[in-house]
Length: 163
Image 1: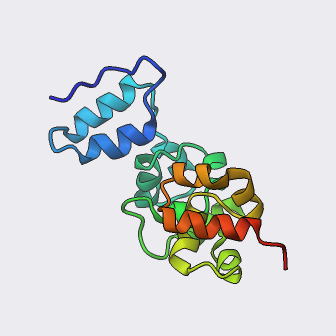
Image 2: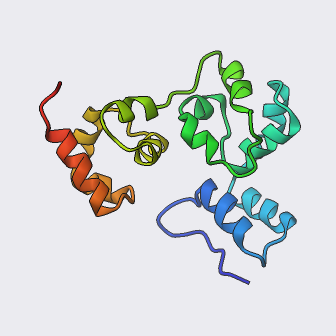
């Protein structure tokens, strides 16, 4: 069984528990639930159900580590679409719950000459504007896991004069 001790530098991330533990074949669903409780993670499934979400949607948010309406509201469309098990066509239900569309920067980036795949990735990473590129710089873009080719292109875009 893998070593599941709490790291000395801080609490275990819910994403680690939800994504990493569930990808380990050695953990059962009961063990994952136990790990989540041990880490102080309370299921948000019932809260989502009380807000009117269908069972499957509530489960997707719970497993994805989205605990509160504020966390959902802070997500981009692309972030939400990366949650495992999200049924097709469910975005309008989340947007109805929030009372507004989820933000997306895909059209913004493609309008600036960025290829759609990279535009989607930027939006998923919450890099929404050229100003965000300037703030992050090349080092910040690398830390986000972007390949050097994309970092070079985006760094040039960030330093280009507006218009």
